[in-house]
Image 1 (cartoon, rainbow, N blue to C red):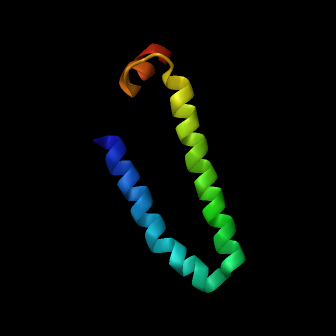
Image 2: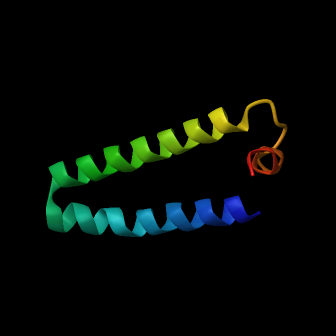
Image 3: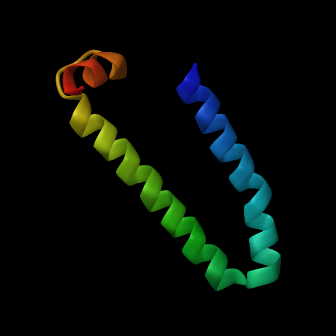
Length: 66
């Protein structure tokens, strides 16, 4: 539930901020920010998958690492 809440907060805040960035900063800056946010999301998901390993859940993976 915590992860779902965090994702909802991140998606909701970016949906509110990106149009304002597009209006004030221009299309190139907006494109750059969208690509940067997309890459960070991709890399975060990649790290979670790599560190999850053979564990069945993120909780098991965290307990195994710490």
